[in-house]
Length: 208
Image (cartoon, rainbow, N blue to C red; front, top):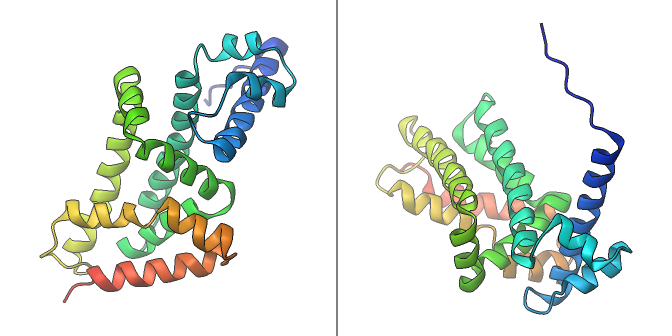
């Protein structure tokens, strides 16, 4: 018998809705101003609530950043898990991940998170205070590595290239600068860009 999902109380639903609004406002301000210029005051103002209410949900800006990372990394994990569970070649499933990460809001959020994570100071704070981020990233890396190893075993990918190199090259496809230049500034369609990236990557690692 399937267990029923417990219903949230009205207060819990309101709390979740408010938290989502805070995270959405934080994404907007971070995208516009960057980490150091983002203030809890402006986030509160955009949501239309008191700054103290923001602090009830997130005790500091670092906690707020972590919540953004955690939410999007969980989305990333689900996407990778769904790709792993599909039938088909390792390449087709890696392409599914590539398309999923670049599509719509997930792509935009991912670029923000990669930009933030690329900042050594922020990354160090996150890894020191929230080890879960590191664990989640390691899970994602392990699952994508498993797909790459499968592709090698089935003769799809070049076995002479170490898997850590293949993994690093795969994640390098999600370049914040490339995303900004090609999609935001040059207005290249997402699907077109993903097609170029996939063609470039998989031709380069194809079995000889």
